[in-house]
Structure formats: structure tokens, C-alpha cells
Length: 308
Length: 259
Image (cartoon, rainbow over all chains, first blue to last red; front, side, top):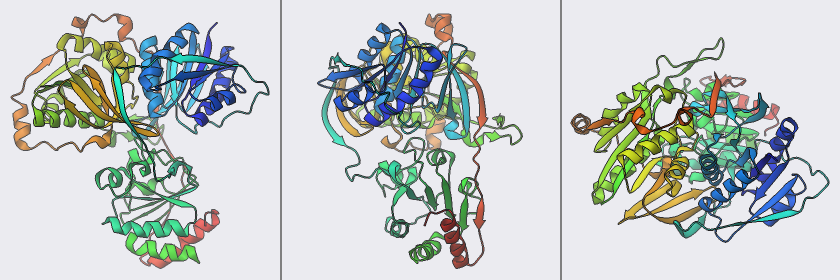
């Protein structure tokens, strides 16, 4: 019997995927099977989905997981496969799609079944446009973290099944470093002070740090140039289409021009504030509030004002 | 010495696309073409490797007939030869079609030790072509690579996996998708631009690739595309007195409950 299958190696994201999956279940009238890689998540998924499957792998590399899930999807006659849109998930999803010769959409924002096809919305041209897409079934979609809230438990608990994953020895892993060793996740921050290339030197970022301090629980974020070209801040702090996607209460952009590739990473923020000396900078078109002025003059004044 | 291939996409420059305010339709009539941003990093990486240790770099692109406009640009960035597939099917191609066409072309013009491409294209950003291509060719794929080097027939890479960085090694042939942070692509010099005109290019006819009509029919079909509009307040304080501007902004933040 055909079914809806979800997978993420990320526990929170795996649970969030159940929200669109259960919505699609209403249209397709097919059971939802949730796959993950750790036992606690599998137990949680068992209270949300019709079936929960724990992938057991000595080496859970994306290349090892992908063929195993693809085979599972083929066996279960998957109609829709939803995969958590992490980098690992995107690799796994694309390989499943190739193996199943299926269509796939990336970073879906909404999903529904129309005329027997999966209809989704996603962004194009680095965020300039939004498109509606139809994918024939079986359809694969990746969904970014925090697109949906996790559903409440259905009060019952399915038995957790196990699926052995064979290693793929074609790629040898010789070392692993975890990212974000400083322990900062800017996507979790309520307020962000985001710095662009209007700063003349790395030492000047102190002005932004002071402002973040005055705003209390604010973290520092930045544009791609500041992280990749200047190396003033770690890569995990840069916001944009190929960086972090953030939705804080306040996004305060300083000396940052606001190219579309950057804005797509922060445009769902509740309030956007821009401080820039160029009145024509695109950031002002995306801002709720702004000051046209020299950041070296404005920042100390704003920090002082917020401290009062 | 490695024989490398870089796949790239000739896309519209999104900076030139305008949104029609009346109906949010997209106006691309003034948009120029460009080599997709992340593919430029792949071209640069392959070129750096070959400049350092010898070998060859070929480039391959599948696009509409406008793809021919990309040849001089791509060859000025380092590759020795450019292959292109110019076909109208590219206009509506999804990643399924693109990977099918590229895989068939690579079987014809290959083999290569390593095939490099960007993590995604700057227009659609599906991020699927690399892993799909590897699957179709039956070879491994290391995706989201931040750093790489080639020693003999082995490629050593650092790949990004959401929460961690992994050092991996893989024996060719393999597909490698690169992240934008891997390098800063060169701006070709006048000499490189002039030299590009002397380098060879070759058309690969889609009819010669043995693809079925089903392999050229997209499974993900775009029904509409509309400009994204944000509803923002656009309150900008721009008096000459910075202190007055700051006082107003501080009051606005307080009113929003953000102080």
C-alpha cells in the first residue's frame, strides 16, 4: 500500500516534518512512516506517525543512508517523501530522487496535493521571486528547519522498527570536527545585530558587540563578505541563501547593503532595522525602521540610548 | 595527472530582473547571462589544481541556445576546452532532466577522474544535480565541499554536513559539489580573455545522447513565478542630527517592545 515517508537525522526537524506529512495524509489517505537515526527521536516519532523506523548504522554517512532509504521507499511504494532540508538531508534526498527516478523540489515552504500531484511553493533567483511548482508522484521534497511546528502526540505509540544500514566504503571518513564549537546558534537568537562591509576594520566590530550587549539577548550576525572574504566572523554567523536563514524578533543591519542573496536569509524577521550611510542601499526597501548616517557616529549613540 | 570536468549553468543575472509592481510578474528582458555563481568556484578550484599539479580541465554546460554566449567566459576562467549541449528542453528542465542529460553527455565525452560543480545554481538553487549525476553515473558523490586536494587518483576533501565538518577521501571517478567558501574566483585578465578565443569548444548534440522522451520531460514543473514583496514600514530617520535620529529609533524600538 502506498505511503508517505519522512526522514531527518535532526530530531527536532524530523518531528516538524510530521505536520505537513499528516496534512498530506488527509488528501492521500495513506499512512505516514517516519525514519530517523537516533533512538530518542524514533520513540518521539512513534507517537506522531503511523510507523517509526530507526536506521541502525555503524557509519551513518549520507552515501550509506541514501540507498537504504531509497530501497525502503521503493518497497513501501512511497507517494511523497519529505526530507529535512539540512545539507546532509539534501544530499540524501537528491540521491533517493535519482534512484527512484522521481521529481524533487528543494526547500518547499508549502505543500498540498492538487490533481494527484504535489504542489509546492519555493523561492527562485536567490529570493527575488516565489514560484509554484507541481511535482508528479512519487515526489520528493526537502523542507528547511522551522518551516513548520511539530504536531502534538496522537496519544498512541507505534512500535519502533529497525532498519540496518550498510556502510558505503567508497568514501572514507578520516576525521570529523563539529561546527559551531563556540556554541552559538544565531538561528535561535531573538535579536540579531548583523554587520556588513561598512565596517572598516575587524576591531570596529566592537561597536556592534556593544550594541548587541545593550539590546540584552542579541547575537552578532554578518553578511557573506564579512565571513568569507574578510574572515572577521565565523561562517556559521553569516546570513543569506547559502548561509543561515534567521527569523528573529529584531534584525538590526549595520553597514550592510542588503543584496537579495542576503535578504532571503532574514526577511522573515519580525522587525528589520537598517543603519547605513547610503540612502539608496536596498536594505532600506526591506526595513521597518532605518537611520541614514555614519555607523561610527550612530552606533555609540544608539548603544548609549538603549542603556538608558 | 588528473583529468577534470566542471559542469556549469548559464543563468540569468538575478540583479537585472525587475518585478512589475502591478502584477508582481518578473521582467527578465534586460537580464544578462552569467555563469552561475557557485559553478564559478568549481571552475576556479579545478583550474587551481591543474595550474599547481598539471592535468586538464574541460567544461560542460547544458542550456538553451543562449548557452553559446558562455563559452568565451568559461574558457577565460581556465578550462582547456568547453563542451556544450544547446537545446530548448533546457528551458523547462528540472534537476531530473539536467542530471540525465549531463550523465549521458559525460558517458560520451568522458571518462574523467573527477567531476566538479557548484552546490546549486544561482537561479533555481535546487542543489540536486551533483548527487543525482553521481547516482546516474554509478559513482560516489562528495557534496558541500569546503576544501579539496588531489593526490594521484585520490581526492581528499573537507565536506560540510550541517552540524559537522568531515575529512573524507575518495578514489576517482567521483562527483564533487563545492560550497561558495572554497575559493574566490579570479576575474579573468585581458590576456586570459583573448586566450579564450583560441581554445576549442565542441557542441554535443542532444539527439546523439540516446535519451528517451521521458528523460527529457521534467517531473517538477513550474506553474508560476511572482516577485516576492515584503510588507515593511519603511520609516527612515535621515536628519543631519544623528542624535535626533537615534532618539527616534530608540523610541520606535521601545514601541515595538524590542528594548
